[in-house]
Length: 171
Ligand SMILES: Cc1cc2nc3c(=O)[nH]c(=O)nc-3n(C[C@H](O)[C@H](O)[C@H](O)COP(=O)(O)O)c2cc1C
Image 1 (cartoon, rainbow, N blue to C red):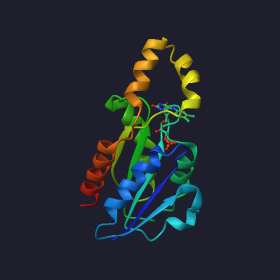
Image 2 (image 1 turned 90 degrees about the horizontal axis):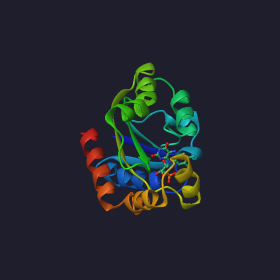
Image 3 (image 1 turned 135 degrees about the horizontal axis):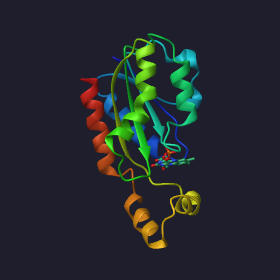
């Protein structure tokens, strides 16, 4: 099976998960790992399975990932799954459903079977801490708790969970 793992990542969190999924997908398959910015819309054809990865940006998929979902041609791959990293510890299921909806819609429109989406925490880059603390209106103590909780993610367990997800959806 020909598998593509492609992703957008600014501070390396989504990339870490992408590498885990790629490692798993490489077992018995012909897998490729590519940054989204290194591939053009026409390069997504001829795969049996595509994994698309995104950080959460303002409760949305990152803009380049949304563009990928618009640009990907119908029938490029019979199957697709997503993976998302976010600094918030967890999101309610209904929020996650909203985040993955653009992937599901793209799959439906383009005749691709949607196989699910993995998500885990990814620590927020330090330069944004002050801004986000203010935006969320959190005390220094509350923010310190949040930083402690997100530090180190994605960790080994997150990568192991991502690999298990990949194993499951690849069948
Ligand atoms: C512009 C911007 C907006 C973000 N918005 C959210 C958000 O709405 N919710 C959230 O949980 N994390 C948010 N984050 C945190 C990232 O999703 C998280 O740190 C992610 O793991 C970063 O992945 P990357 O290292 O692959 O870029 C945001 C980060 C940035 C840079």
